[in-house]
Structures are given as C-alpha cells and as structure tokens.
Length: 290
Image 1: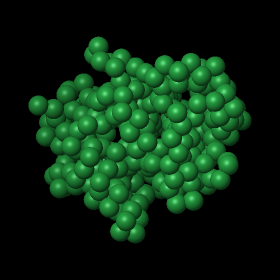
Image 2: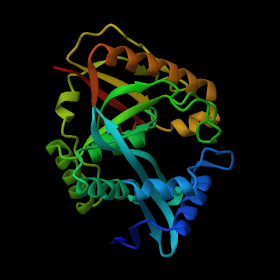
Image 3: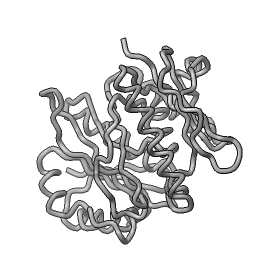
Image 4: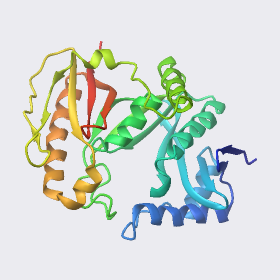
C-alpha cells in the first residue's frame, strides 16, 4: 500500500515498484557523482522492501528529488532499522527534504513496533551533524575507522571513510523534544532550534581548536582531559575542503579520528552538536557516561 504525503510544493510516498527502484538508482548516480559505482541495484531494493525495508521518495511534481532507504537489522538480539542511504539533489538540500524524509522513516519504523534506527555519517560534515543531533536527537558512542574502504565517489575524494554510528532511539522523550523544537523553529520563520543541552556546552572543556590564522587547521589537541563535558570543534565546508585542500582534509580526519576514538574508548559519548554558522564551525558535546 502506498502512502502519499505532501509538504508545500513537494510530495512524499513509499516506493514499491521496479520502475520507482530504477529511478532511485539513477538518483544515486546523480547525487554521489559519475565515479560512484557502489549503487544499490534494483533487485536489492525489491527484496529488502519486500522483507521489512523502508524506502520513501521525495518528489517535485513527477520528478524524484530525494529518498531515504533503510533495511531490517538486528542489534543485541532485537530487530531494528539500519538506514543505509539518505540522498537529496543539491538544489533541494536547503528545503528541509532530508529532515522530512527522516521523520517519515521514523513513522514507518514506529508502525513496525521498533525502537531504534541506526546509520553512519561522516563526523566532519557539520550540517549533517546539525540535522542528526539538533533536529533528530541522535546520540553517538561508536566511531568506525574507514568503514567503507576507499570510495570512488567524488564526494569523498580519497579521504578515509571514517564514520560515526548514529543511534536514533525513536521512542525516547529527548527525540520527541528535538523534533518538536525543529517544527516550532520552522513555524517561527525557519530559525535554528535552540539546542536542549546548550547550557551544558558552556562549561565543556575544549579537546581541540580551529586555528584562526590562515587555513582552518586543527590545533591544540588534548587527549588527556578528565572533564565531565568535552567539546570537539570541526569546521564547516568539509566537502569543499576535500576538493580544494585535500591534505588539510586528511589532517582533520586523522586528528579527529584520534580525538573521538580516544574519548569514546574512555567512556564518553556524543550527545549534541552546536552549529555556529556565523563563524563557519561547530562543536560536538561529549559527556562521560554513567
């Protein structure tokens, strides 16, 4: 059964036919670039959607402009959804399409009686972090090193595919609060929602800094902090950095890899992300568990 939903001039629906799966394949190639060969093919969409997968498309008229795709998973002997892909054409990325697709994915997963959706994302992508933490309410305790190996996508430019594993506990009151605040911000004119933990970030101790002179290099790394709360800064514009300054991007990757793996191993988890658009940077808030 297909479900159609509309938001402004865009519409959203579950994708169930071979023709729709083929459109998703073409959209994958467009979004991830001509060198990207790791596309999910039509037969995999067909079988996984048949057995518990979620595949929702976003449309501008008859044109598919985005999609979200998750498959059935198991964690700690409990069924979950593993969100493999979220893709939106560049010209629609400021229209809230990705956010709306994630909310529809959550609705489908709640209807299955499940509690958890997980996915990987690049911790150096500040806008993705803003979506995941500030608008959706994820937490992160896992850092995977080069999880996908060397990627052929122009979006990755040979940089190691290190990733956070985002945990979206979709029945958690914290998640409800983040979603409600994001919706209120949209009704109030599109301003960013106020982070629920912003007061906690004020007394966080910095594990690194962004050099102010010249290129935005990672500086003053401290791996020996014992504070309750720790802040890890990243610059905005990592995708552009991959193309324009690949050595700097690699230095950021290796520095943040060391920071996150060190503190996660010591029992910290990432619970928030504070985006500073004016200064083109953001900061993860890490807190000690327990």
